[in-house]
Length: 99
Image 1 (spheres, rainbow, N blue to C red):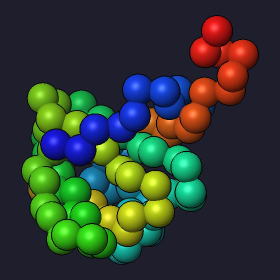
Image 2: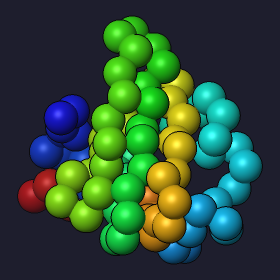
Image 3: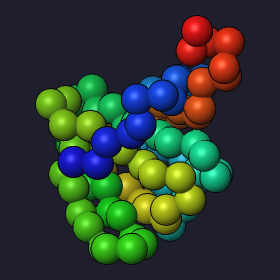
């Protein structure tokens, strides 16, 4: 499993998605901005996170296994039946938060 750096902090979280409410752009290749990491948190069911760059990789995520999205790396997700999930976004902590 990919790991995000320890010095990043959460700054935004999506609403909860289901297989019927997830934005269509998540099915296609998309990416985060530079220096933005993401964590895909599955609450119920499972989905596949397809990492499409560097080394193509498919990971089945469920409530016991979350997905890590690296900055600018293209990926897509594919739900398997009923699923509930959300995405948290992380960025570098400002210096005053680290002291």
